[in-house]
Length: 107
Image (tube, rainbow, N blue to C red; front, side, top):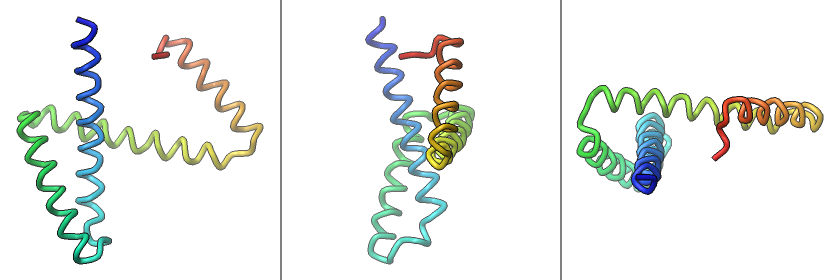
């Protein structure tokens, strides 16, 4: 049972990464050079086919897109944290660890 849960978590994480890649390629396709743009479009099409086949539900895709938006926001927060002073970073880390401990989120 635990192995199936771990596998499901891994697949969901891969789906999240795939959807993030889809969103970023779709948003930034104009930034690619022509030769790379063709590869990016092909990758985008392949990922879309895979995601549509695997999920097949508009609601599931919508939830996944919302999760990728949250994932990107968390990434931006962590990048911004790296720009804080050393003391501010330490305070942030303490607060972060306190939240993880409070909600028992350690993996």
